[in-house]
Length: 468
Image 1: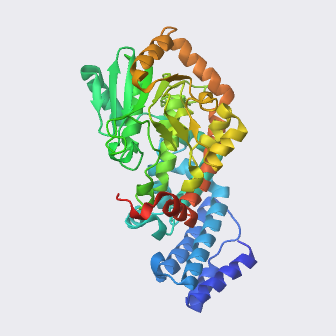
Image 2 (image 1 turned 90 degrees about the horizontal axis):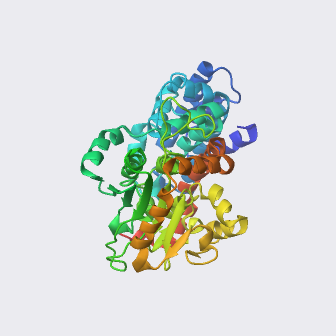
Image 3 (image 1 turned 135 degrees about the vertical axis):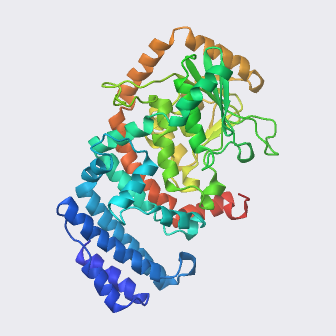
């Protein structure tokens, strides 16, 4: 932090009525350089503690006046400047300590908690997160942004970031426990996702009927579990993913692929920042790259994952995150009346990994129009057919799907898997995905707690009047 910005922050603190002695102690605790890890862990943690102490002395976010809001922003900004500096120097060392020199696989949620213990103040504690989760998104101080900063630096490291991607591609333990049930009964119902064997294909159905099959904090873990089961099932060669039947009065009795993220839950603060990262490094990445083995790096050249070709069946609409899913598929069958949208601008967030993947399908201009200017893509249009492989009438979708499964399974699973792997090597190698997710972690964290997000949801979604 420069002397000029430090003095500006101090000025903001004085304007909020914080004591000169406390401000002087805070200023004296600032760290302008880095040294070795152990020295910096103590020095930087002390500064984070000073920031937290002064922030606690201010009223809660909804009750702050302009001067107090400026002081809170100064404290949060100065702490984040220090986190960036600390992690630029020590992210790899810290990751190696947390994972015992990469001998231990930690998923994102466990990793950020361990970081909070190892370097107090670097990421929020479980208690801090619990206190924030009870608030509307607009009333939060955005402590989870610090998780995004941490993950951005970890993923920026080839060694640490590749190991973290590997950890997130491993099967969930519960999936291994449920495989015998799938073998014995041919079906596993997880609530918001169902996995069922039908001949050569395993069918996964996504269901959140009240919310147009939207994704939220209640669906994510179960969706990943279903994806694990579908991929690991040894009796099937192809995986099919489809949205369930809806309950909404406008669409009752009809299927839809899905409406993306549950914006009502996002507005009400129920979807944590890690949800975004766990989704894209978890089940979405598994659909693209397969389920990893513990002893093999999930790189298409040096390692081997367990994978299957995936078919997406698009009824009705694929909005937001569900449109993103189509960009990981081997084959997309869509109803002639279905459409796709990526309304990221209206939501104020980044549409997952779509910014990396969509231009491969549609070219740069259409991708920019879809992501930044809300261009709607009817599936049965020249632009829609750049993403969708086959179009069928809505009442003929089941028959069309049967034909697609038969056609894709005739050539055998070995060549299909080899070909999808070969395509990935040129289109999206693991290192490219890792580097993208490094930028995504930081940017999505700031977007999720931006005032613009709340304004967009209230203006475009009427979020403050919707029932959760």
